[in-house]
Image (cartoon, rainbow over all chains, first blue to last red):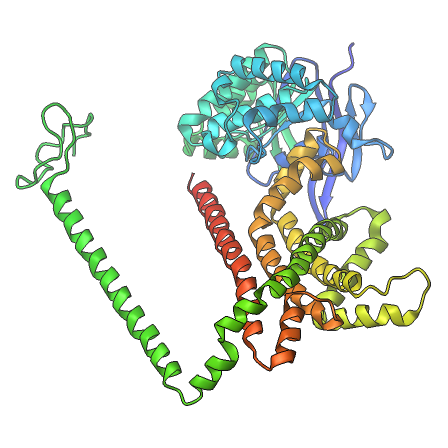
Length: 249
Length: 307
């Protein structure tokens, strides 16, 4: 069996006395997408931040391509070179143009020559229909466009794994679709992903596995159709019912 | 109510006496309602302008009359506003102001660098820098808390008194040093406040792209922070220009000292007024420019907030 891209084993995370994640174990094989669903505060974002080493775990192990990235002597900067992360609030750099945002990491972190990085960035922007925005500043773009630029920015570094943290939650409903279709394209091209989302329909389309996170624990997991249509745990049923009532299913 | 399918389906909602601004070709020309509104606004503006002019005239006029009719006015005019004498001493004062200008350039540059370094130390989290962080904090606390005049006196007279070989006795250098020491403390705090206003999510985004701590600071945090604090820093620059006049207390022949020398000769204070005017000629345009920059940056921020 090939080594999975990501493997978490019995991961635990606390903030002071509050346990945010407990006994988190899952595997993400290459070219698959694992989607985390769950109420706000269930620990989805913290989980992604822990994988990205933005937060430190308090127990357990995180393996990236078989390497223990939760080891004490690991250099986070080296690990993050293999990971792409997209945030709920886009977090584009407002003082840089779209193009400058995209080429920052390739040129400064990976040592790619500037003209090569620019060519590649323009190619990516073109592919996602944003080439004409290359020289604009982020505040001139719609939310959906900003988020797509943020996705492109992490793609420009050829990440091994893409972490998407509720990337549509800050968007108005009309703009959600353009972002989701971008992610669907990535999935088709074989990108390995871990996502946190409130968009159940979308989860069903892209996920290979759906995990329901409840008070910091993975309460239930499985194939998207089974999980979203006939969950077995009462908590999952209740959550999906509430999501449905909110019109998100 | 039925949903409107688009423009032009408002029948019934439009009052009959209201002439819509669109003719049949869809071309817009202002409606009578809008024209009347514009007329009314124009009238209101004209009235405001008239009131402003009248009140300015009244207030300033009264002020002038009070001053000019005061019993000491003649004496005051002769000792402070003897223009012929003022013009005579002006070259010496301008020459002295050259020292202030030079001091401003040298001190300004040094303060910018030193202030930035102190601000970075204070905001750093590296454990290796802990003692420096502590020193930076102490430095800021001390030199923001002492009147600059005292720092100038302490440095200007204290360092020569140490009689250490190789240390300069040049009051110009010592005075500049004192100004740099004091202003760096202020500027460091301004820059630090700018660094703190950059949202943590920006840092998180940069780090998750693989940028190191230093790269994050250099490419993401500082550019945003410095842009935000540019108006207050320009404000400090204006203050710095004026405060260079304080080194005259050490005997440096700047504009203030030059004026003082002339005054001592004739017991006429016009040179002081001339020195003040020379300072104003530089500081007022700079202040106006700073104001405009501040306004522009505020407007830009607000525009972003609405987007």
